[in-house]
Amino acid sequence: MSNTTKKSTALTEGSIPKKIIGFAIPLFLGNLFQQMYNMADSLIVGNFLGDEALASVTSTGSLIFLLVGFFNGTAMGAGVVIGRYFGAKDYEKVKKAVHTDVAFGLIAGVLMTIIGVCFTPTILSWMGTPADVFPRSVMYLRVYFCGSLASIMYNICMGILHAIGDSKHPLYYLIFSSVVNILLDLIFCGVFRLGVEFAALATIIAQFLSVVLCMSRLMRVDEVYQIRIREVRMDTQLIKQIIKIGLPSGIQNSIISLANIVVQSNINAFGTAAMAGCGSYSKLEGFGFLPITCFTMALTTFVSQNLGAKEYERVKKGTAFGIGCTLFLAETVGLLIFVLAPHVIGIFGGGAEAIAYGVLQAKTVTLFYFLLAFSHAAAAIMRGAGKSTVPMYVMLISWCLIRISYITVVGTLFDNIQLIFMAYPITWTISSVIFLVYLCKADWMHNFERQELKECA
Image (cartoon, rainbow, N blue to C red; front, side, top):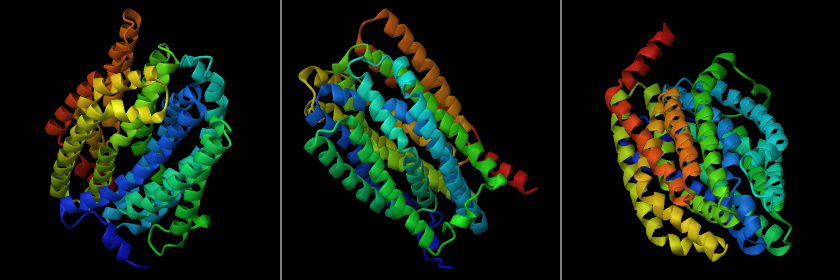
């Protein structure tokens, strides 16, 4: 069995900045293309099918992430487990964890399909989705959730490669997926004007083709993480570890989405223009926040591999470097969006009123991106250390309970959408303060070492 990949992808040796940046750059490029095809739905739908169609697509993001985020967050635990054993050079455990991860993904894909298709109308009703966009939103989401298996397995396969330090091959598959999705969007919606459900179909087809490519590589590669269909099964010990680490991340993603659904329901009360404009801003934010997301993903893999290798001093230096980079990038991106918002939000289409809402949200929140970046970086570090319950509780308190309480009070007392937008920077501040105290005061790495010794005893 070849050791080339093991040596080239391990983050446990060599220059820390070079390793983290070298891992993060392909992640950035890959996620850039992923955002491109996420934005393609909005750009093409908005320009070819109109404001109501745009609102029906963009306003569904929180609901999609509620379900997708739960299952993908849980699967994230597999990435941490795989990365830890890979760093420790326990390749037998790597092999078992990979096959357990695939088995979990197959089950999760089926469950998400059933839940998404059955409960979409009910949840959209709870969100107060306006009647003029409700039928299209239901159709879009039901078609999207019919492809849940492709969506989950797409992220499972990418997660396996990321866990062992390979961010280049996922980049190739994401580029391919993005190009396919954009072409199909143009054909379905731009040329034939078939409706928003075909924008969802385009995403499903693109993800399915990428899964085929990624699985094909994982089944052919002569490495410890090779997938063999006959070995795809749940390992009891490993699935417990994956759930222990991943379930809190899944719950965290879902509670954040639940809080954002509450925010979205308050935005919906301001009408279709507000839905379209704020939905367009959310696409822009996802695009602009990519560099930060990629550094935090790199931090999770870096921490998990180096803790597995017991390189504790290297973990300290790497986390300090990663946090510094995320803060700098976040504020740079925030300033750019703040200045360019009036020009770039208009590219999604929509009328002047919709653009004005999007610009107002951008002007309200973008200068606080450094707080959001710090919270994400701290959460990534904790997940890499296997302490995913810490960010879960922090997010539950600050991004769910406090955010919902704030929105409930403000939405009841004031008819001012900018006050709704302020829920984000306020709760980002609270979570950042809590994380800062934890990282400075808690002896979390030595706790990890003691936990490892206990497990071995």
